Length: 308
Image (cartoon, rainbow, N blue to C red):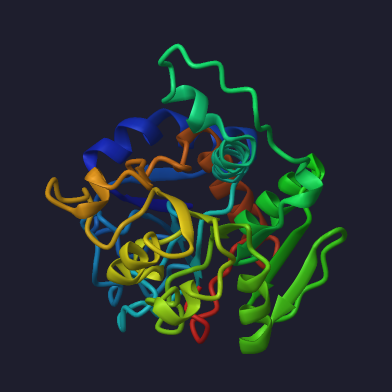
């Protein structure tokens, strides 16, 4: 079996030992190359910022295995006719669960007031309500959204999940469709954005949608930067949005003169909510190759018509 690793030198530094080790554990006999002229490759392990953009010569390739969860930069590539598989792995999911849970609890228990209020004042006149009174909405109920929703529910938050298609998940109030989206936003004391980026979700959180959030709502965006209309969010921070923690942006790195940096109601994190970790991602790639070789559908197979 021949496998091309189409990633940057930095990617390869992380995968040159973990990927062969994962293949060995999965009992896959494969040779891995970075030579893009290996047109008879069985599989391509692909990074969207890597050296490969024309998939036309790879007529024997059974699947292109994306190193990232997001596929918006490749799914529209007209030369890509091979099956595309996005990254779904334990490390990526667990990292996202931890980031979303941490910042949701930060908002819920009011940590900022004490972290930033070390001025000798004993502030014991208010305290957080229980999680059962703080409503959370997760937009996007894929693997990451579902895992985060379930984790928040286990803490005690009442959780609503919204997705393009209707889903049923124990303990989660699942909604779909335009009317369901508006309902989900109206009941979001904490809003978590984990939608894929498509034509339909680009600037989904515009002025109209942000105005539906309750007064004092908190917003977390570890999904995709273009889900939010930046100007609309900046205006909403003067109205009904108490604070926003943003991990992803329309332009990355976030320009030094961007208003988010200096805004007292915005926390910027540098796209670190969850990253693909080579150790767990390599195992996910190996398991999917085994599935394909056994005639099974790989986990994370992309629906081109939906865009994710």
